[in-house]
Length: 163
Image (cartoon, rainbow, N blue to C red; front, side, top):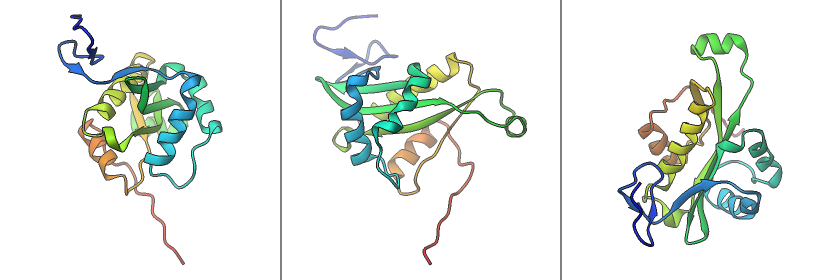
């Protein structure tokens, strides 16, 4: 790897200088991650410390993007128990699930989300996953574009109707 002075390097492409670094999630990141999740992830409820407890089940599946000491994005996932019949239908043996990913709106378009997802997918693969799932709200258009760019396909639609 080539080291450029005062330049953080993209974790996979050593010749491409980036203004952020990808590193493992640490419990000291919890407050920043919760703030990012609640401000930038389009889910129905509030993300809490209890939601972050899942990071302990697969520590190598929890990552943050940092720029000059500020957490600007995160992604974390784990393995879920999938019934054998579903695994057969999916032609899969071990399925990882991305629980949550968000990037600060001010830092989008810089490759932060792509770098986080690439790192997380690499960890799932190294741990034996042959399929990864995630859930994404329909209104999270930027996220959907990213996931499709990374090769994810739609497997179901969750619908609701107000009465």
